[in-house]
Length: 501
Image (cartoon, rainbow, N blue to C red; front, side):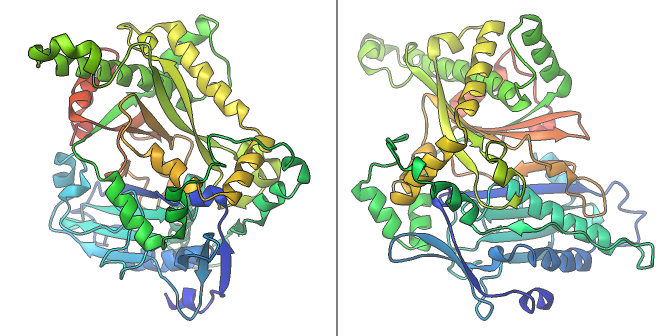
């Protein structure tokens, strides 16, 4: 830690509208590492001193993770990095009485762990562990008994960075750890660290062009202020976090974990291509999201039918009081658009601020609820996501950013997205991130998983797992919907380690 505190400089980093809109969330993932030869190893698996030293060396390149998150008199958020009063990330390294196999049997459910992990809510809130403050980040290393494995749990506030910055920090930490374990001789190459950019002036420069300010119309309601939006903007980050956590507080939900073999995705891609209904630009993420839309829409329809079937005395009132799905209604899928490849000046640098924007694509329920997987239906969904992404070019991005800077309504924008969505779901794309390259010197993680999340009706699409040859999908759904998702004939039956919790 001393190496970090002696090197850090005081500075203030103002956050922009995209950061503020994401201040209602945290990015929280667990990296599970299994020691395949625990009894034959004389050294501790993933040595604590190495991980500790490597962490604080990596932190030197990410000083924003040790700042205080504040709001100024004009309701603008900023990070105050004060070298004489740092808000250091939570960092713990703890032994556990459970073995790695115990966690395998428990479906890698971190709720079974005997310790408190800061940041597991999916919402940035102060706790006793954080000293009553909102921490920009927290990191917990949990060592399972008999040297059988390690969990590295990481949480970073989404207002600080997006998934791109999150995985960059994790891979930098791992790279430094590997470098420290190399023989210290003349053959060891010097540690090469890129320059990470936190100053939001790069995005502000785009909005300074007066042509962007001319004839700017409302985008997704961002320019409309309200009493609620002004109130949220006025509150301190700590009070806002507690309120948002209460807003998101889930009532009853089930987490389902599925594994989709790479061959299944390639078969879907080939099926679309043979029908002349796809192109090389259709991403794996869009194909999986389209597949999920059909599966979840069907499951919600069946859960709704079950609700009425179990209440026959209400059948006469169904046409008037149907609690959810109208077949002609729109089924909304909320996805995040990555702006980096659309802004050349930013794509060329390692910019760590937020460059993602949540947007929705809607489809008719009666199209999605067909029993068979129709190729043209899948094609229309994939095209919908492809077109939605192409609409968000640099100029449109600048307009959205301009509106976010001028109005506190951006607090409400993502807040609404986290509410229970009876007729749709959110899809969070992590498939493009190098989570499985986070190797601290003992091999890649066996599994990478999100923490139990505060949001309802959400799907996390994880990257390809090199050990299983496929993609993991995490779903958080109401129990009655989750039952039908698992029974859907289009879906691959989950193996034990991906069972519901």
